[in-house]
Amino acid sequence: MAGELVEFEEGTIGIALNLESNNVGVVLMGDGLLIQEGISVKSTGRIAQIPVSEAYLGCVINAMAKPIDGRGRYQRELIIGDKKTGKIAVATDTILNQQGQNVICVYVAIGQKTSSVAQVVTTLQERGVMEYTIVVVKTANFLAILQYLASYTGAALAEYFMYHEGCTLIIYDNLSKQAQAYRQKSLLLRRPPDCEAYPRDVFYLHSYLLERATKLSSSLGEVSMTDLPIVETQSGDIPAYIPTNEATSIDEWLYNGGPYELIVLHFLLGVACYMGREWELSFRLGMRPWIVVAYSAHVAAATAVFLIYSIDQGSFSVGMPLGISGTFNFMIVFQADYNIFMHPFHMLGIAGVFDGSIFSTMHGSLVTSSLIRETTENESANEDYRFNQEEKTYNIVAAHGYFGQLIFQYASFNNSNLLHFFLAAWPVVGIWFTALGISTMALNLNGFNLNQFVVDSQCCVINTWVDIINRANLGMEVMHEFNAQNFPLDLANSKIHLQMDKIPI
Image 1 (cartoon, rainbow, N blue to C red):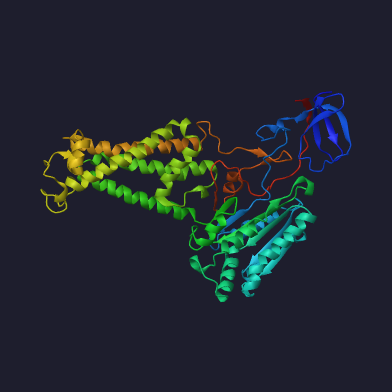
Image 2: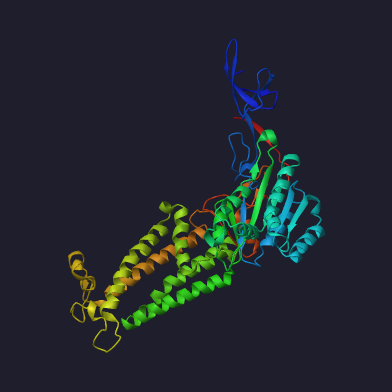
């Protein structure tokens, strides 16, 4: 009958749509790569149907109701951070969590200390995971050429077991040492150096290696090879040459280090200095009752980003590593990536921050022109900007010269306190609304759920990157593109049994 499912000899399913006297038109529901002329096709006696249960709630499925969000393997996930920030611990924990998952693990130690490698091997042996783990060692006392070749040795082993055994995981610890060994070899061969004395093909060196991570097609078993490269930074210099090269070849970053206390200290110092400047200007302008208004914007920003948002996400490791400027950038970009047009607080905040920056520029011109006394009580040291305006008249025209008279000729106020309060209060109110927008989305008060759960191919819940990494309280921050659901390795993959019903579609 029309719409009936048919099954080919090699397992592909199709739907019979055209029933004619001498042929049947079948549309394939698969790639059909193994279908050849002359193979047998049988009728199933069934129409298209899918399994249905409550396990599909919160799940992303394809047209055949098969979960497509249980991904995580065959990724390239960069673990980056300074020395002694737990990079090897993350790699070791990943190997330990593959127990019982039928995953062959390869750990490549490049240029590491012998004691560090011995500690890792001891941990793996004590936990009983060496039966599915291979450790490739080229410590710092080996020749540079051997350190350079170590990663390729590990990749060859991982590829072999991928084709013959199943899914594999390879950890390169670390590629910074391999790049240094390659640089040493290249300089000895008198190759022309490039940035930081690295040869120009160092980018190809690592991209060629990391692109070997793959997932094979169904005809080859649907097995995969996952890369976890480790890169060591110097004093948190992430934009350095090697980390930047690695970033172009990976799917996601795991940023280790950057103690949150130092981040908060950086931000608080910036806020304190800015509030000191606001207090000085307010004091000189006779606006002392309004000093608390100037303070409130920065306190609101710090509270929203470093307290409310961090607590709601489950860990203080989500703090911004860029200080006060990065915090305000986060406040604006964060909301923009979560639907700018549907969040009124964000739109008000954008208007306040950006329009306020224009007013602040005018405010600064006025302050330098006539308000701050640096020499005497009656005369200003900034005589070049006075343009002979009256003492009690603070005029934007006077601050901006002749062209200002044509543009801002009506922007003159006799009440100086009113003018400066308006120019100072506008950006403050904008920051208030932006901080309020961060808080409402962090607490999901506006319908934005940042902790969506998905289900793997066995209908097991896979936690998001926020849950797996940030809630682990490991002092890390996951850095990847907003709204991108890139997961670490599938750490929770236990099978469950569900009562399924069949309904036609």
